[in-house]
Image (cartoon, rainbow, N blue to C red; front, side, top):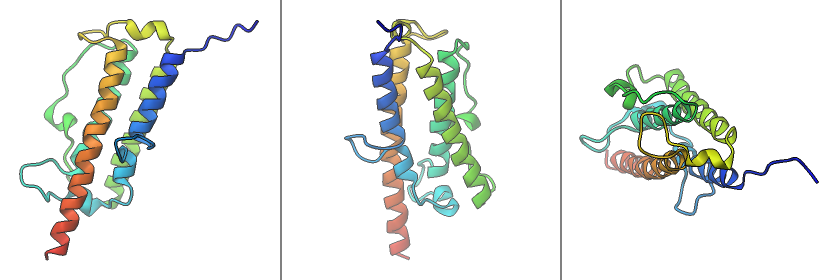
Amino acid sequence: MSDVVVNLEVARLADQLERSFHGGAWHGPAVLEALDGVDAAVAAARPVIDAHSIWEITGHVGAWMQVAARRIRGAAKTPLSDEENFPPAGDATPDAWKTVQESLRHAYRELLEALRGLEDANLADTVPGSDPTVRGLVFGVIQHNAYHAGQLVLLRRAQEDSRDHT
């Protein structure tokens, strides 16, 4: 017999996280699919009044994946500042946009690594400084990714519509 421990629930959650971020989700485009081909100008634009930009949402999704990874690893709950929660575009250059996207990918890898470092039994653990379990936190991130992927798609469409009417 093998001493290999198979953590099926962790593997399932990792798969769903992957689908919400890279693609293959049944609901439609995942986060990276929604961002594919978006340039800095489109990312920084505000085609919907009083809505966050693609840039801000991208930073927001990354920030919360980092928070989840830290909390899975035992960090205490700490609030994000408004700027950390929805980082502004600031100098919306192509290089700055590339950095935002790289930070998003890094946050995803950090969360996936934290998740894959767990055993199924750890998923019932409470998250330090919070009510949900680790399982609930990961489900929340998956749902958060799906929600914001939808927003990204709508903002892209709004931006395309505004370009068509100019």
